[in-house]
Length: 284
Image (cartoon, rainbow, N blue to C red):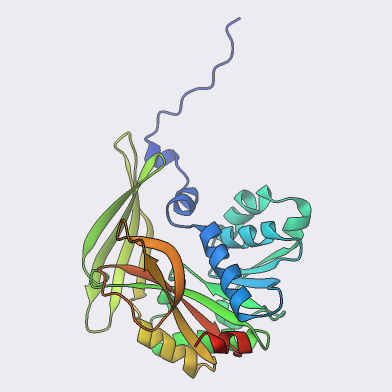
């Protein structure tokens, strides 16, 4: 008897791939993200960071990285999309051991509602809060984060910009087994609202169009910092990426800065402190 052979899936690769897995591989770098959070917290606070809240958490990839790192790490993940949260439970939380899973709680809720337990730190990464397009809505979210944090809590955000940020363009980047395509579809200079999309292309010539579609506001750093301070944060510090002298590219090291380079495209972190410790005061 001939051995059993699994029937080959003849569908184009774009129809076989998982869009959430592709996103995590192409967009997220949770190791570097959590490295930054841990190192920055260590310079600002004399105590350990234990309870982290990941807003707009999606698949909770960052939360899983957090609880893997230490037995005292706990995470709260908050997102409105129940389907994406379920994907995260099935594919990310499932990779954790039982004790690690017990230290993650996922909530299908509005991030502005806060959580019953006050976190030490809150993360809003991948420009997720750009979806809050009115000044009042973004300010209300920042106030809710401020009020929900513990007394010496810290809010970590990322932001992007540069003179190419409002342009209509398409950029491609090769990944392992596929090509990541970022498209800035449209931009309205009157209100700074824009449409963006993520597509994926594959070696067999197939393409996953509009795997993710975003309608958001291109917020500027002055606007974000002003809203954070208005929300009650004691400080809102920009952490700018350094430059590798040999390549002229970013070196992956982010430090407090008051002056940035007028690059075509940049990504930075913003660190907002609810209360300023003596250690962080010395950094200013």
